[in-house]
Amino acid sequence: MDTTDKTAYRVEEGADLEARRLEYLGAMFDPASTALLERLVRPGDHVLEVGVGGGSIARWLADRVGPDGRVLATDIDLQFAGEPPANLELREHDITVDPLPEASFDLARARGVLQHLDRREDALERMVAATKPGGWVVAEDADFWTFESQAIPEPLATVCRTLQDAYTEMSGHDRYLGRRLVPFLRGAGLVDVDAEGHVFAMHGGQPSAEWYFLGIARAGPALVSAGLFDEDTLTRALTQARDPDFAALSPIAVAAWGRKPA
Image (cartoon, rainbow, N blue to C red; front, side, top):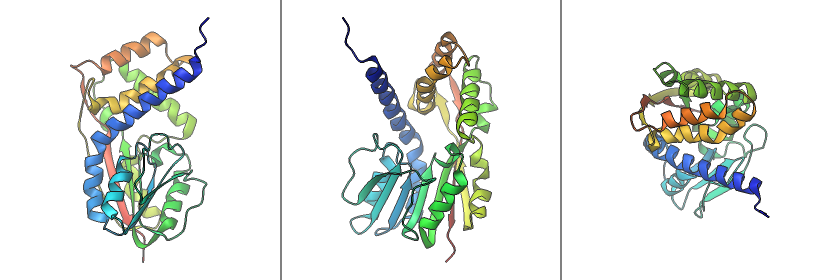
């Protein structure tokens, strides 16, 4: 008799996929993030990191602010955050509802968080409130226009679009928030708002593509169960995504930042 806990196995398998996805996401997006943060974060600063994910940027920030600074990194799920150094506090926290100390941070930052929230205005308002007057608020989110406007093979294009549409309906996800970050930050009362962005080539089976397609591999079975497409379609789509000949432009990675008025 097989006494293996199949549910526990599936959870562990899903966690392994997510850990790998976060590792690849960091490899592709951390260099641009840290290049921006080097201009805004000084030794001794107090920094808020919303959405710790795999923890790579939180640890980088802890090193950047040094022993006289501190970093508070929050997430609804801390299982992938890793072991924090002494000046990094990890806190389980929902940015849309849970309190934060007001006017306490020299910089508050969120990457790949706001576009996933249906209450993103509340989240940004809390980030601004937690920032000291004169401090910086940074938001980094994607705009999928470049990815969706190019020739993607079928059924991969349909699977990607179906996943995004389902996520939008379920959670209010905005896959085009990147293009709206500047007015979004200005609408929250920030000044000196600026932005930059970049794209890169996604190559089949490489970290440049797997940061995205591992998410589809993890979410796909739930969409199959919901009847949005069948398992064969999912399998063929992921095979296309991992073909060494596959190449496509990534979504636009947009970073916007503004200062809280002093």
